[in-house]
View 1 (cartoon, rainbow, N blue to C red):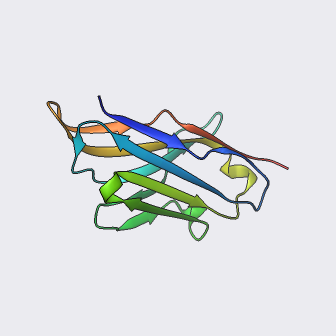
View 2: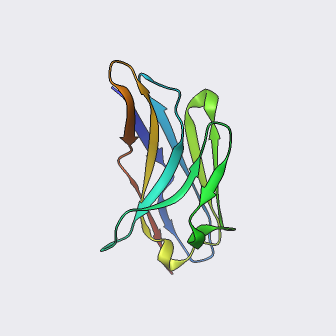
View 3: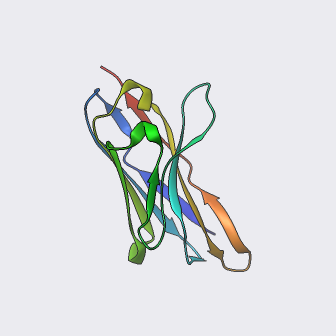
Length: 120
């Protein structure tokens, strides 16, 4: 069974920082890309940042210059460093990965989500 396990969410004040982690486990290979999405209350899920196995990245305009995505290919882990957090960053953050799942072919996998709350 393939799983994406997220950690690092929580409550932070505006201007603060958090670091999210997401580790892929199970029979999944050639993971490319890995990404973070978020969904705020009453809004649609949106892409926050994406990174390829080669390290190419792209970001939502709303987080450019504040968030940094990185990955450790050996550990099948992706990170999201979030700085200068704003109230509007409050959302459930989801990890996403696409890769070869043993016996199932190329699949997209989602994590269970981790809540980030920015509040004073």
